[in-house]
Image 1 (tube, helix red, strand yellow):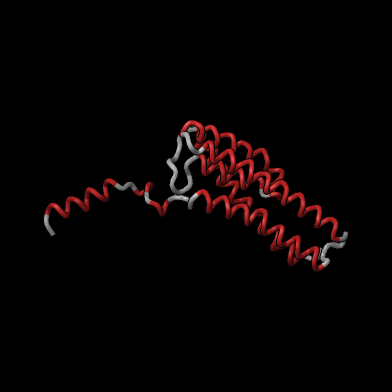
Image 2 (cartoon, one colour):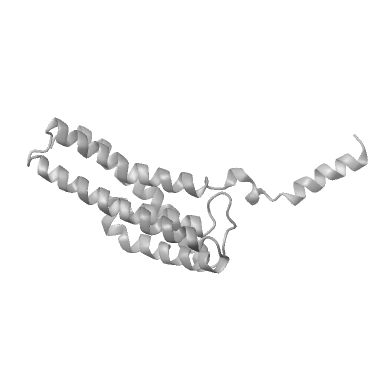
Length: 173
């Protein structure tokens, strides 16, 4: 190995900080937001559909149907109200910072509606606009803090909703 090739290897290692490697990043925004929507909205809807079809709700199928409507409506509204403005906000660094703050705060405020998936979806949008997803430049300051909080809320919302669906399937109603 020549000295020139050895120095290029060393320079390459020094030029690529560990934190900037693709393996240390969250997947792309499309993957994160789609996964959160699927786990927080579609999985509970599938569970409630089984409850209605199999007649597992002792208070009748109307209760499960009402829950299905609420989860579908609130979860999908959160998706649309997060992604559509997010597409516009993602075009500018300053707008992305503001969007990360706004959606991070919204994910905190909507925690009481965890059953709908809204906090997780809004948190995933905050993570996207805060630059935590692959293909985005991370922001600094309050926007980054709220993006991290939003990502944590998205993960916890997924765990809670999937656990609710799985436990609900095995607990007698």
